[in-house]
Amino acid sequence: MNVHLILFLAFGAVALAGAINLLAQTHPINSALSLIAVMAALAGEYLLLGAEFVAAVQVIVYAGAIMVLFVFTIMLLNAGVEERTKGSRVAVLFGIPGILLGSILVAWVVLRHSGTEAVAAGALPGSPQTIGPLLFHEFLLPFEITSILILIAIMGAVVLASKPPSAPRKVS
Amino acid sequence: MVPLSYYLLLSGILFACGVTGFLIKRNIITIFMSIELMLNGVNLSFVAFAAHWHSLAGQVFVFFVMVVAAAEAAVGLAIIIAVYRTRETLNVDQVNLLKL
Image 1 (cartoon, rainbow over the protein chains, first blue to last red):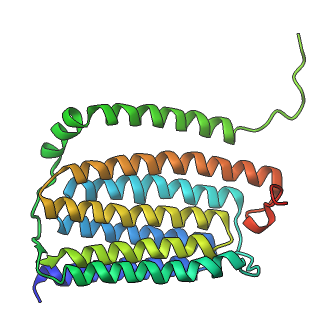
Image 2: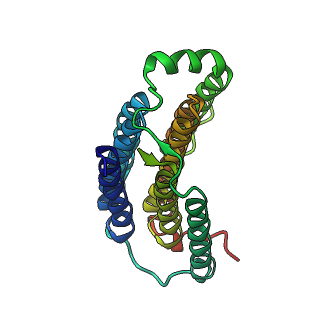
């Protein structure tokens, strides 16, 4: 057992516990907090893989901005404890075989790569210095397209969340 | 040295947890958070494969996934607010006007 493996297992255990807690909790705010724990643990995993810039962005954008949006919405709508209704039959019919199939697939992948190829700690240093040129030269077109996507998303969010006019406007 | 398969296993389990939450949860906000969990699981395998194949393109793709997740969260939460305004509920079982 080296340090790298121990750290991987520790962060992985935190991420797994958070994911299972997200499923077990009934109040949305508890689920949101456990999702933040999952994201922070995943940032640790990215650091282990050498992707330091991705780890920083994960904490700032995912665990920061996106989750603040979620928590803000939960507070705004005053979301209470989830009402448990009878589970839909479709979920039982397709969910359980789907999960079984997925686990079998994952187990097959694990058995196939039975620990011979290892990923060294910090094998690929993903500092901003190395990612920047790639992002602004090779992936320039996708990068610009995502800016259009963000613009459309902002406008859509403003239009959808704005209050509908209570009274029909007077025609002048 | 951690085998690549361990990272893929963790990523797959996180994705499966997201799918399970999507199917069993009744609160529309929690369902939305399950989708974020799935995206995170995929991101982990992107970074693991980037380190395995010594190609930084995988890490760049994580940024694109994050941008799409941010746009999706903004629009989705706006839709949730609009649904709550008209239906006064967050339970997906009670949002069934489209059902026959």
